Length: 309
Image 1: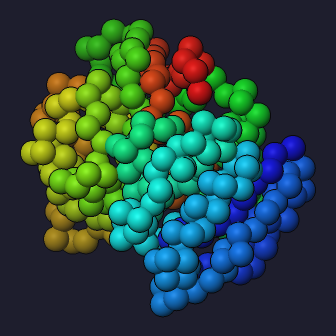
Image 2 (image 1 turned 180 degrees about the vertical axis):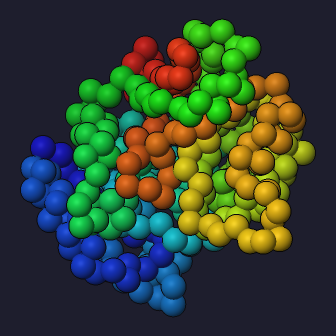
Image 3 (image 1 turned 60 degrees about the horizontal axis):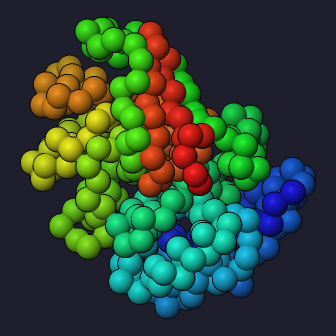
């Protein structure tokens, strides 16, 4: 059983039913759930004003909980990054509190990584995942591994198209002691040129997004390319990009077009189909951890058991 602290550093919780279901689900799984005093606060689109959300982050850090879990993503963290007490958060992590989330939480994770090197977890949110009508079994199993400290890595099976594109590469270790980092593409790109963007070399960069047309995905990848970020990575791993709509104007331009283009721009391999993003099935991934990327035929594995958490 874990002590899980629920707080809201980004958007206001509008789906109260999902919030309640999420709390009930975590309790049913045997966890002790503590709700931040302002978890359900609302100020315009945010979960309270900037000062309220900053205070919530710092209370999460001081909670002594095993897990500090966001209620939801949305938007709001980038505007309060200068006010976060990064050393306080890093100290909490060193004492055993795992900060977990996705989407807008990418800003917090990468800012913390840039400032302190502390490891956080890209993983579920309370409402979107545990509050679903039927929470995903794989998501819950990965979360349980993370909470228990039993997780040694994460693997997935990628498409035939991905295998064909990387057919000239031999099976084996494609990246050794590489820093795993990334998250939501749009949020990550918004940090470029700021003190909150990690300067990662020898990295494995994982990316996902929701509601972004492929041409916008390509535009953001182009920004990372022109900024020199992609050239320093050992591999690019693409998660789920969903909830967008193609138009007649595209004339065949689609997400695969972007992936094919990306492979012509960089030397590092581009892998697809990572089970992570705004989808029910998602892995828990340690942002900032050194990992090995191992590929065998159509199977990829991220291993972090050989390093200290």
